[in-house]
Length: 124
Image 1 (cartoon, rainbow, N blue to C red):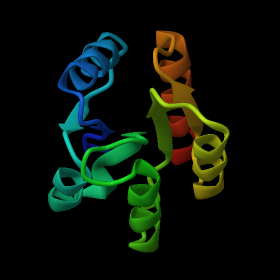
Image 2: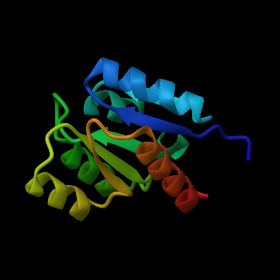
Image 3: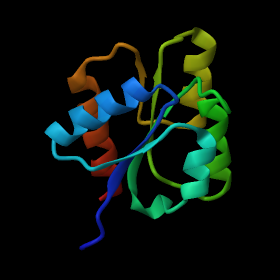
């Protein structure tokens, strides 16, 4: 298969997006970065995504609501949630919406890489 597949990273914090991109590049993953839910939806091409890393607290929409919208639209790429605002309500909503992992910032590099590897194993 020659289609290049990428990890889509959706976070409104530029430094977080860039840090994740550097980490993933070190582990051989290609990435596409999005600063908002709107930018992701406008891009489309979800068949290129091996998984989505979505911040729960985006400036333009809840990451959980974004996930629900994408699922409603037929997007099946696995989701990894990241958040700096952990709460029982966020965790429950994230798990209910369907995700491979729920990571709280700051998270260990191996936790994110392991989550992506599990997502890739489920896709391939």
